[in-house]
Length: 314
Length: 241
Image (cartoon, rainbow over all chains, first blue to last red; front, side, top):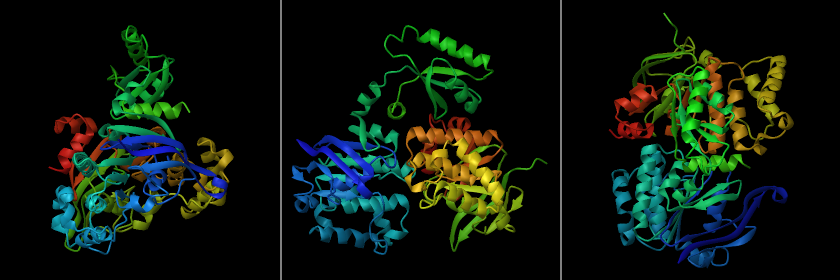
């Protein structure tokens, strides 16, 4: 069964719809799936989530959550979806406990009724339950917001950039929580600008300028990368990247952590036979440019390589 | 004695009973790309605010571009550049107006501002858009413009506070090209980021935990010391003990 169905959703802003935020987006999410909308700021992630959360209207297209239409059935839909906006939107001057009670009351439930669902998260907040929400750290605010979005036991959870502005440790904890929520059968749609978080989703859609560039499992996205890719490093990374870009065989070269990723012009097909020759040539080229500490490896592309390749081609 | 571009000795800031920055001591060289990392609430922002002359230290020494931040915070502000993702350019001004505004703030002459505008716009290939509102520019262009504007007065140091947060991967790398380029020109760049792979691009990295600098080294050496395969792992080991 499909928990989310989106068909040709379009949304524009500004005079005469000058800014097209979503340009005919279609996808569907299975029940219990953790689906990622991956894209940079301005890609259209927030518009998409707000439409699904019944907070704004699409210009055209249809969308259903649990077979309920986001425009026609918005009232019924609101009681079975949980939404966590990108900007912290709880009451800053209410305490942790008060915020949670408030959201439970709004949905006609009590904290005790669905406590099982939020227990793992709430125990971490409990020491601060009388602290005002505005005085919590970034990671704690996010946990409280998640609790409030879950308190009525929603069937679909919409999370808009839960990892933004949060340090890597808190971010990892948050993703661990999402994995646990999946085991309750909750369908989760999460947006993020962090490409590395794609790997934590069952399936992802790469969103750019209001369009979907690719949609698949993280492995499927990676497998679609069709150029030979090398990880290269030397003592002088800045000069290395410049020099690699001028190498005749180079299609693109960008920094990737401690290595530079070099993609070649040619296709991956039949490349394995030539790989050793190409690597030797590359080594020689870099030596002739006086690089030291050279290392050249075959690299496996990540989702980020795929995103870069598909935005560069446009 | 060689002069460090940034030098601190037991730099401390307390807010009431809470010690946000606890006796940090470090030095940064000219042309260095220095990563300033730490979990939310570790004290990075407080430290950066002290180094940029915005917040008076409680105790300790901080010398920035040869100026004592405790005694001459206004002079510090004139010698540094600052850019963050959250605050940089005025969206309802055009590119030209933003450059003129910041040039004025930094006390550049009308003539200099005019020359700088041309140079900057040519370099970033923004000529056709110079009279457009910044609001209308793609985010990636804005970032590059913001960095260039932060360096309008040719500071020796630029503080970059999460400059690439939310930017697409391609633009993020183009932005780092500019950072490398500035460093090659001898500018010192102090960068905070939540992208651990960007920590790898820094010459050296410091990790703040609970107000202290818990580790400071090259990314390669940090990984060796903490038996980690990535900076992400180093971060997790340090931030959560």
